[in-house]
Amino acid sequence: MKNILLTSILCASSLFAASDPSHTYSYEVTPFVSGILTDSKAGLKDDNYFNGGISLGKNIDDSFIDQIEIVYMRSDSLEYENSNGNTNINRAFLNAVKKFAITDRFAAYGLAGLGYQDVTQELGDLEDSAVFNYGVGLRYDIPYYGIAVKGDIRHLIAVKNTQNDFMYTLGLAMPLGKKNSDVVAAKIPVVAQAAEPIDGDDDNDGVLNSKDLCPETAPGARVDINGCEIKNDDDKDGVLNNFDKCPNTSAGIKVNKDGCVEIVNLNINFDNDSSEIKNQYRKNLETFANTLKQNKSLTAVIEAHTDSKGSDAYNQNLSDRRAISVLNALKALDIKASRLSSVGYGESQPIATNDTEAGKALNRRVTALVNQ
Image (cartoon, rainbow, N blue to C red; front, side):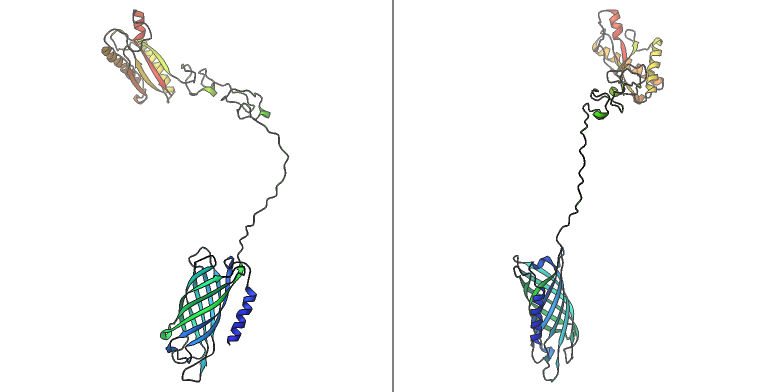
């Protein structure tokens, strides 16, 4: 029996040995020999007997467990104590194996698993039974040959009759099924194309030179599909659309260079020391109110001024009253208060001399700062 097992191990070694490192393979076949020290409950004549076996391990990547192995072993022919009978013990296990690298080629490992033992001729306490096993061992990967020498000790516990055995093994692990680590890159055929002429846009108007009929338009100008400037003024305020920052102002409103309303002179003058609006200015207020109604986005700050007659404090108060008087008149014309505010500047911003009556009359004025 021993000779048959040893011969099988040597044949397997020559069949499966490889030149690559064992970790580059998916499987590992390990023929092994072992000795078992059994306890007195077994009733065997010799409590230290020979085993032979083989295991097939599946290497696992990216897991806490490094290998799952299936093990089969068979004992030598065993004689019972105080009996002429003999038996063989067949055992099979499913084990989980965890490796602990010590060097590149030298490692320790632990294992644990569950199995079953089949006793060909049961006698006494030696019976068929489920078996637990666990153990620790060492392995050395032989350079250039892809095989490893393994040795371990294991504790076997038969569930029935709590039989305890200790096993020591020596095996030769050989790799099977090399992992495919080659990356296959898709090759896309490159088709040579004729070079196309380079077409630019020298005036940066978004129309290529080859299609630009107006190749020197001004920076920022709006152009048509031919690259020519669009000279429209949709709101009729005298500022072309491409330069108009306020493109929806009402016709007839005076605007600045950006096309936006700024200061509107309401042409309201007050009598000396008065904040009362004369009837002759009602038309001016109605015209301005209609402008605000037609342009819902407009808001206005009513600004009032005085001449220099009187103290600064008095004139400041007077200008405040004049501004509020105009604001209230606009509210009476259905302009929402949320679109209006007022401020008085007193005599601080004259537009004419205060040395003449005519100049003073011009300084007693109200204007509107319009925002859009």
